[in-house]
Amino acid sequence: MTAEHTAAMSGDAAWMLISAALVLLMTPALACFYGGMAGRRAVLNMMMMSFGSLGVVSVVYVLWGWSMSYGGGSVAGVFANPFTQFGLSGAIVDGAGDYVAGAAGYANVIDVCFQLTFAVIAAALITGAIANRARFATWLVFAAAWVTFAYFPMAHMVWGGGLLSDGAGGIPAALFGTVAEGGERVARIAPIDFAGGTVVHINAGMAALVLAIIVGPSVGFLRTAHRPHNLPLVMLGAALLWFGWFGFNAGSAFAADGVAGLAWLNTTVATGAAMLGWLGCERIRDGKATSLGAASGVVAGLVAVTPACGDLTPAGAIALGAVGGVLACLGVGLKYRLRFDDSLDVVGVHLVAGLWGTVGVGLLADGRGLLTGGGADGARLLVVQILIAAVAMVFSGAVTAALGLGLRATMGWRVADAAERSGIDGAEHGETAYDTTTAIPSPRP
Image 1: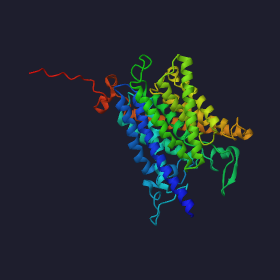
Image 2: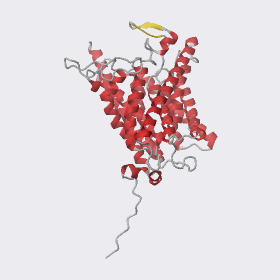
Image 3: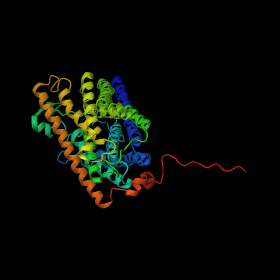
Image 4: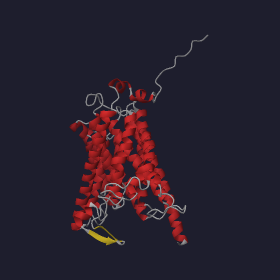
C-alpha cells in the first residue's frame, strides 16, 4: 500500500467518523424539532421518545442489528443471520487481533458506527405521529421490535445485497437481467437509494401512518386546533437537522471525494428549493408564509433528496427539491381528509417526500433518468424505483401493524384521557418543561 493510498484511507476514515457524529446529532435535533411542535405539557415526553430511541436502538444494533443487516447468511434476501456476528463478533477485530477492513478499505468498525446512527434516527422519526398520548414504556419496546423486524431487514434488502438491491438475487435483476461487474453478476438496472429513501424515510413514514391509526387520535383531534408551543425551538431543530444531514447524505459516499461533494451540494440546493416550494404553497393556499412552514420545508427537502443526492445534477436537485416541498406541504393535509392523527406531520413530510425522492430520481438521475437522457433504460429505472418504494411501504406497513396491534393488546399504547388533558409530561415522567408557578414574596418583618 502506497503512502498516498494510506493517507487517502486515513482521510476517508476521518470523514466517516465525523459523518457518524453528524448523523448522531440528528436525533437530539429531531427531539428539538418535535419538542417545539408538541404542546407545552408534552414537550419533555416528545423529546424523551427521541432520546429513548437513541438508547434502545444503539444497544440492539450492537447485539444483532449489524449482523441482521450485513452479517452474512442471507435468509431469502430479506435479512441476514442475526447470530453470525452477534455482539459484533468478528466484525471489529479478526483472529490475529487486527482491525477488520470494511468494504471501503478503512476499519469496519467505522461503518458500524455510521450505520448505527441511521437505525436510531429512523426509529425516532416515527414518534411524531403519536405525540401527546403514547406510553413511554410501550414506545421503548416498540422501538426495539420495529428496528429488529422492519429496519434491519430493510437495510439488508436495499444495502446488504437483498431483494431490493442491485444483487443478482434481487427483484431488479429478476425484472431486467444482470450484467458482469467486478467479477460478479449485478442487476442491469440498478435501483437507486443513495442514503435512505426506502430504508429510512418510506420505512419510518409508513410505520408512522400505521401506528397513528392503531394508537388512535388525540383527545380533541379535529375539534381543537393544535399549535406548536415553541416555534424558535422548531426552527433550531430544523437547522441542526440540516447540519447533521450533511453527514447523512455526503457521508453515504463512504469517502471524502467528489461524490461526497456532489451529495453535499445537492443536499443544500434541494433543501433550499423545497423550503421555497413549501412557503410558496402556503402563501397561495393560506395567504401567509410561516416559520413552521419554513422549518417543515427544510426537512421535506432533506428527505426528498436523500435517496437521490449522489445521482443528480445540482439543477436536477433544485427541481426535485421544489416539487418535494410542494408535495409535502399538500401531504400534511391528508390527516384531516382521511382522519388519522399524525400529530407532527411525519406522514406528510417523511412518507410523501420520501416517496417522491425515491420515484423522482427515476425521472431525474443524471444521464439515467427518464427525463434526463436515459431512454428505454430510464423508463426501466423508473419502474424499478416505483417497485422498491411500493415493496418498502407494504413491508413496513405489515410489520408495524403486527407489532402495533400486539402491543395494544398487551402493554397498551394510550395514557389515560385525564393524563393527556392534564399533560403527559407529568403523568409519564413526573416533570414539567416550564415552571409556571409564581413565587409569593415573604412579607417584610
